[in-house]
Length: 144
Image (cartoon, rainbow, N blue to C red; front, side):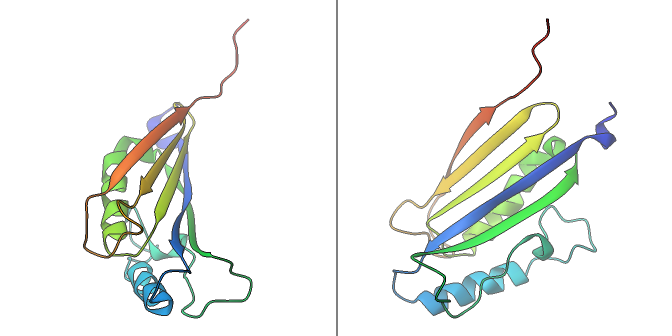
């Protein structure tokens, strides 16, 4: 299979807490960070069209956690994965969040799950180092 024909699926979510003070301000900041991403018409690693855009007001259906989910299909993004992670971490630096998870499904090397957790109760825009943990699983056919 040629590298250009390999499909990669990237999906996940960014979580923040509704129970922390400044909820509507936090949601506004997060909304603006997502809307500041480039459109899908360009070739960015991240674009605003792949993200759900949070509302400012809390809906009755929301419980304790704001969830911004995202997903996209790429052509062999694992070959440029360090750049994708760099862009994602730039986005996280500009947002409020408690944790974030990214799943990368590849045809050749299985599924990789990356998790970021805030150092304290939550991450505030422009503050603190981020630590990421990666887990790898590979499902494949067993040769007989």
